[in-house]
Length: 500
Ligand SMILES: N[C@@H](Cc1ccccc1)C(=O)O
Image (cartoon, rainbow, N blue to C red):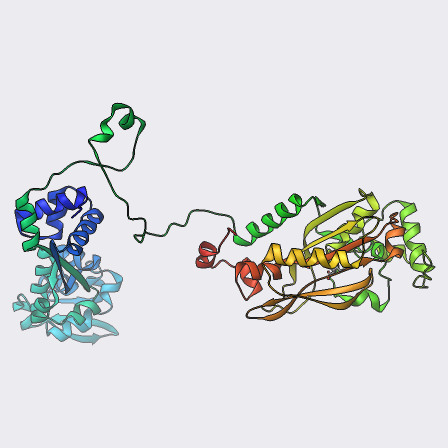
């Protein structure tokens, strides 16, 4: 039978005592409580010792009770004044009683029969009675003394004197449960002790010194039970959703994507709409609701040449298109808004110039009015991106998107449906299958229209997408309410998985 150092030590001490209180064993072994308990349980499992536990209801003094045991119960303090003066007002008593003690005192003195109460000119007058003059120790006084002496008293003993409820109501004492643990050695334990136990120091860390000196040959190594349940540790870590976004950023960069960044959350309509060939004052702009900035209302337009080309595309068309056929307003394009989609950054990047072939992405916080529910937030995050290259087509796009959903979010089933966006043709909408929510739409994609790309100075195909990354995070983090991504629920924050 293999015993640990601590188990051996505990057994030896138990052998001397035969039967011991748990606390006694802690003292005798010099080990800490946890170690002793673990040893006892170990010894018990091997049939060498037996642990007995007995729970008992006890009564202990509260802080107020402690105080009363020193300065006396309020009724005694009041009686003392009454005995001196014979007749008192409440004001007189306020010298020896606190505000809280004063309130019930009239009732208390009356129920003890220690005082009579009269109303004299609107004032309460307390007058001492015969009983008050001769009052002696009552059961409650004995209970208080007992509690003050013994600190904890079995409930049954207190109940013989007074009802605990009275002590509790007067906030003098509280009930509690204590568990008394005793340990006993078994015959098998005695036998083992008789054979003799070798108490060798156990080593739990193999150090270079042990190896060099050759001492490792003599020491006994402590065995670890790697399956033993341990206390859970919750070290500081990244917020789970933050970690998810960082992971996606890493993945895309590893795949050769270049990150597009921007300082502000505010955008001109020009970049949010116009540069993407979304007409002003036209239902096509209404494919999504957006917010507007109240102050300041307007920002700046980019270089004149670019603005001219965008205006031209809108009014008369480009690349064989007839355009939208209306008069384009620069004032309207200057209006400011919280960015409504990450695609605004794709437009900016294309206008700035891109590597061809090239792959770009951005992770953006975006804003759209909506009704909050388990799959909708008004402020959410998108991963937008595009690939630009000579021979790209729609099939490449579908392939990329599927890979994202499967690889990044661990989605199992993806579905594409035809859709409409003013800036892409053809356009597609993507949904993924969530075990609890069913099909969840998580983004749109398409081939950027030539009216858009040419106005921005690009003359090769650009395939683009915008993914509602919060929705994909729901899959990865195993939640069915999008609001949980920003939750303060400590249990979730602690237990959410970060590694995959
Ligand atoms: N911007 C669109 C998604 C999209 C991006 C790029 C191309 C097509 C669609 C949205 O927010 O829903």
